[in-house]
Length: 373
Ligand SMILES: *Cc1c(COP(=O)(O)O)cnc(C)c1O
Image (cartoon, helix red, strand yellow):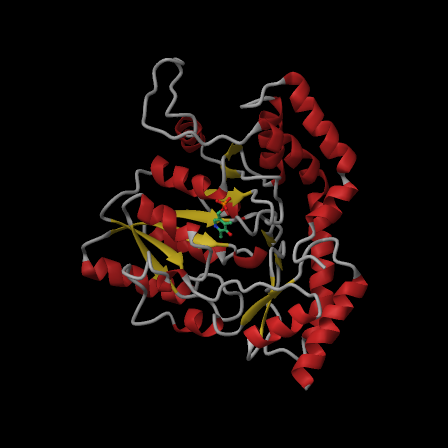
């Protein structure tokens, strides 16, 4: 059994993938070839954005946003600590200060009250300028964007949706970009929409921002090929990956439905045995990047499952504010109590659109047996 079975997906679309790869090898435009612009058109349409720009990975997508807004030393960027390190890494890399915020105990997304207190804390202190909020659509469920949007407008700050795990997720039928200034995503193979290597994208409705990021991702290019107008980076999506993603995007809505069906079966089978099954709020549709439960002894359960051939993972046992490279950055208040607490109990189960019912039942029954023992 696989934690994420990419081979099952490959079997479903192997003809389309083979054709996509062969087409690129035939035309030979390996960098910024026609599949890249076609993918960007389709990503924009899928994500209801005016502009979509692909890039080398999800971390660069976030970094390009920091560069475009000139986020630098003296700037405060608010983000949750319960996330993959890249969310905070790009802030520190830009020389700015990540301010770690606590999360909601049910959705694990950025806690609005903790964010409000952190903004007041930074403003009261006066040494840093509040510039950006980076919300993370953790495990595939969008953050509370209507509330985040209101705060960002009131405070004259920018709002980023780090949707590496939640690309395709909606809130009241709308994508995060309906509220956020920009959405970033990752096409790392294990993400809900992944390629066969590294890849990423940004979506925005702001033409000026899209133009700047388009320049930044190609060495700061201007209109004259030989005159770079700003210092940029080299962060493009390979044409091969774009071709592969086009084949995967075609089945992505169907895969999101399959993931939701599997999540519902897990909820049903585990709801009355584990401490907590995932909470998806009314009006939200998750992409289920992870199906994460809370149990008393996650490591013991993980070992028991492993003995039965069931892989698991812990997202995340150590929040970013407790990692060596980030421990010196400010947090909201004296401690991030919810974040520290959930990290002791979380365990992520196999989740992908091709998880068969019999495998799922086996996972559910093995967990039930372990817990009732
Ligand atoms: C995976 C991930 C990223 C980084 O994406 P890469 O493509 O691996 O660089 C950023 N933020 C979150 C929340 C992620 O899960």
